[in-house]
Every structure is written in structure tokens, then in C-alpha cells.
Length: 255
Image (cartoon, rainbow, N blue to C red; front, top):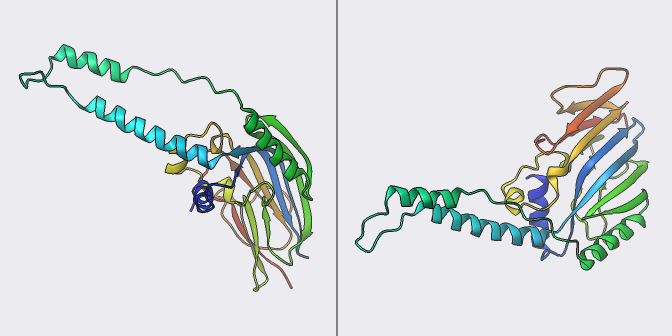
């Protein structure tokens, strides 16, 4: 299941009370050492999505699309049951196929700004956030860095005050001395639900690099380009809105 689909399903299960944080333009890195110490950083943009608004807009767009399709596929009959003339049909088709001009983005409401600032405040209170700045239009610039020990699993970002419950990256520590890394939000965001919802911002703004380095045993990694040249074990995934591969790696510790 992709990141956006997982996000929408989870949000729906919670009566759409949660927010969805999505990557924008970013640079992110994870280093895992053989002694189980790690450092994770994310520097760049974070986009706040409203699942309720996105789903509502998606349903409206779906209904409008269905209406347009029906209108374009029917030929009215005259009173005598005979179809319209070729000229009439051509005229009708011209109206249906006439390009529409996108509406200008609506001004940001005071409520939306207040909610976004509340999210920024909640994030800034969490250990690891060196700075959180609201840029407007549901977009933030963050500088996050966390160093710790993998004696347990690690996920980012999870914040109860901000009602953010969908992780972008997870490091799953297993009993067999391995740890699996999955950067869920950096791949496979092409979903029918996301495309139908057509939010003003979101996965389409995702662009950056995720770099993984380790001196532990690298069991597997799924970057088709393989490891980056140079000393050490280094894998760099280039992330775009069209990225389908979820960056994944497995390392094994000596003990």
C-alpha cells in the first residue's frame, strides 16, 4: 500500500481528525553504524494536507467529471426523434471540448493559518526539530536531526499534538540482529485516490534525495543504480513525484 493511500485510509479511520504531512523539496540522510548508533536528518519543506477537504474535493471532481462525460456522450433528439444535424453536433462538441481556465487559488483563511501555526508550534516542541517555520499555504520549512541507539525501532514523523500519525520513514529493529529501513513517503505515491482528490499541494511537490550510509553489514538495498562510488557503503535515492520505488535497505549488526 502506498504512502498516500495509507495516509487517507488511516485518516478516514480516525474520522478525518488527523493531518497528513507530506515531503516537499528536501535533503534527507540516515546513517546507521555497526554499534547500532544512528543519525537521521531531514532538511526542507513539509506540506500539510487536509484529508477531509481533499476527499470532499475528490468526490466533487468525480461528480463533475461524470456529468461532463455524460453531456459529451449524448446527442439530443429532435421532437420527431431524429438526431441533431452534423452542424449542431459539431457545435455541441465545441462547447464540451472548450478548455477551462483554472480558477485562481483561494485566499488562505484565518482558520487555516491558525491550524497550520498550531502544527508548527507542536512540531517545534519535539526534540529533534532545530527549526520549524511556516511559509504560508500549508507549507513549512523544517530542520530536523535525531541521533540515538537502535535498541528499538524508530519512525519519523509522529506527533500526537499535531495529529500526525503517518510515518515517512521507519527503521524496524528485529530480533535476528537486523534492521530494515523503509522510506515510505519517498516512493509509490502515485494513487488513484491522490489523483482524484487533486489537493492544492502534496506529493506532486516532493523532490529531493535520501542518502543512506552504514559501516554495518549491508544485507540488501533496492536502488537500481547500486551503491554510490567512493569509500564506504553509501546509497542515494533520487526522489521525485513520479518515484515508485520505496527506498528500502536491511543491515545486520554483529551483536
